[in-house]
Image 1 (tube, rainbow over the protein chains, first blue to last red):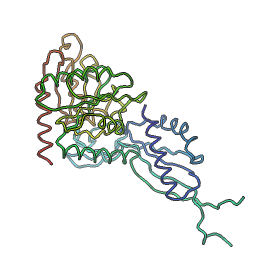
Image 2: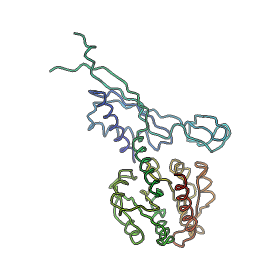
Image 3: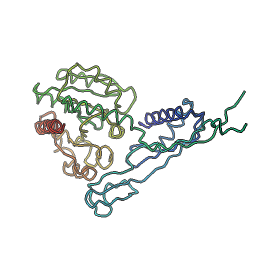
Image 4: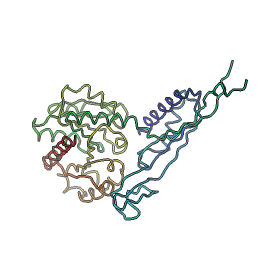
Length: 123
Length: 227
């Protein structure tokens, strides 16, 4: 199981973003998991809850988007979204395909609590 | 106590969590290319014969090529001990981790004797799942599948075979005794990775080792001519 090490990398990146924006806490973290990412959503959630308690990030929500595989056929050049883990062009059945999206574990966005700029504060 | 007033801000990132590690791996790979070192990441389930293949490779070349090995395991130096009579080798022990990561490879490289080699083999942890997600700066990923494992494995571990460049079917001397068809295994793997090269090898008898070594030489020549 390598999800723990991936979630550790994820939280390190969130911490970096938090510091760059002088945030006081993190409200939510949205990630995307593709079918060919080699990452299991349930194990990511488990690792997240285990690691978040030591991360000093507050109590962020984790949103996991499980996406389809996006492919482009090298033969007929049609782009398709395939729901199952099918590595075949649904148009021409060629297996010579390029994966456009769905083979990664991606950090999509982070919602932070950041200090209100001074000029925005009512006197 | 004065509290800081805050507001919610959403930062769009949309980046692979492994992007920084992949970039480091790509930088290291470029440096290997410039130094003429072809790097191979050997992946398989435990006991498929990765160490035996490296022993057979070293015996076949018999000192005519310079090679070094980084070998990963959860515990013990057993694989490094087997390879030490043949080649410079460093054991990478992960403790409990099920795959090698680039930082472990970098530590192992620092412990290898100084000087460039023509071939650097990284023998990964025996596991057909997690190592598929980690770029170790290799030029080629080589998946081993032994005849005792069954010819139905490629389709069951799609990411590993999708990300591999070559498939070595090992323990071919056992083919008369096991229900394993090389063409079935290769066909199954090529459904996932049509460009996959395939070899049958028996490291004990040496069958197929010359073809495997010729493939390595050709791959290194191609790397050198491309830079």
